[in-house]
Image 1 (cartoon, rainbow, N blue to C red):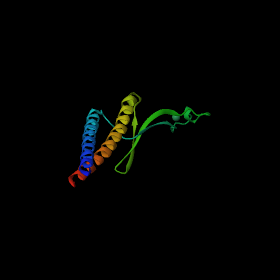
Image 2: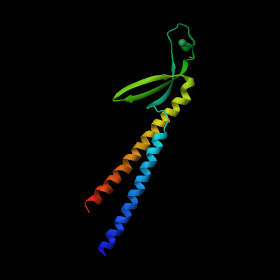
Image 3: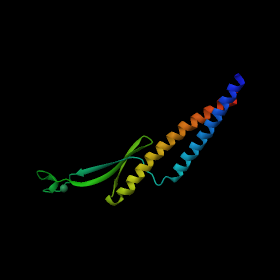
Image 4: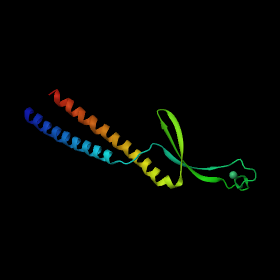
Length: 125
Ligand SMILES: [Zn+2]
């Protein structure tokens, strides 16, 4: 009875192991398919200049802009970069790819940890 149960459990574990391996392969394929990526978030800004009598100082003011900016933090250091309007679609796609990469890697970590635990448990039987 105990042997039969162990056999059943092993079969279940083997099936789970195969499923995890397949899912990890899928994550790797999806990662390989990702295009250009960029960390950060996009914001829109309106500025006031130094020219006396400029429309940006009128009442009500007509500020200059919009200016687009990507802000990001790398290795603890915050930076930002201005983005040309024509580059906005590409930048948006890159930001999206970066978020997708993070989700995929997080999934890989989850699946990989479960797979590793399964394999380690098997070795002790
Ligand atoms: Zn101005």
